[in-house]
Image (cartoon, rainbow, N blue to C red):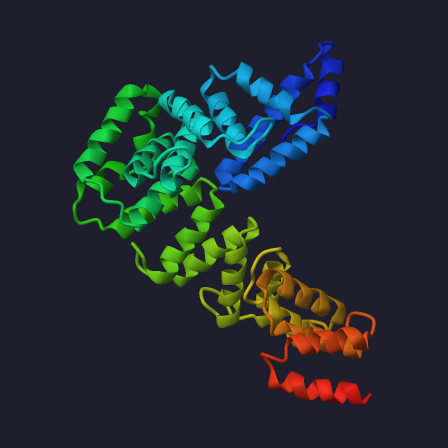
Length: 377
């Protein structure tokens, strides 16, 4: 957790030394960036966290961009400057300049810069798409211990990026020669060389190896995909117990799909004792996220009918509304209309009920019959 401004003020009073507010802000932004990348957070979420911290410091994004520019001789700040260009933090969005900054950071052996440069190549941001170049940058980052790079290498193998194994072995050896700080990495990841020296290893086995390292490093998406490998037997023998363990671990870290998968593990008794009430709790956690959720309608019905939980018509109504907004399911108009007609979780509103029933006429014959009953009232 990043230190607050008050924490630094207390430290200043204790030592009798003044601490520059800009240093406080930069330290916090660096902590946010490193921790977020380690977890595998989406870039937009990281940018939002940056802006929230900058706003709390009562300064401007332009000032922060200026601070990044002043420190661009340092590899980490080259990466941060690239991030500012990519997401318009204190400047106009410029993907080409973002690419240039990431490239400079990568050339100075910064594993975060290498991971972001790989993404530029992968998605064609500021440069032409190049999956081969993306693989090499991800591999540099992975060797440097970056969980995002490890996850990226796994994805490249999973997607079938064609790379000669002999080139990979030479590349790893050269990386160790170029940067002595990396020499300990092979020892910390037993089998990295044998992974590529053995031609018997399939792309799924190599992907599994890197997903495992990403998962162990705390990358939440890596944990989810690692669990999926165990569930489906991709690159490893099927193991429902381990699949459940890693799905739950990713779910506890806020991964929405992992929350859904954990719910299904409990509901079906895969890797854990069957418990429909615990399954419901996980489905509900998934349903509360402001994203698409296939289980949202089922959870709402459970609240309305007191299945696997206590009856709560208000929660059911709110989930129906979320389903209409985020899942864009036109069939939910019927359920919302029923809520308005009967006052389930919301004040009665016959006009709103009629309006919603009309919307659902194309999809639900039963709604057509219900509409006639309402008009007779």
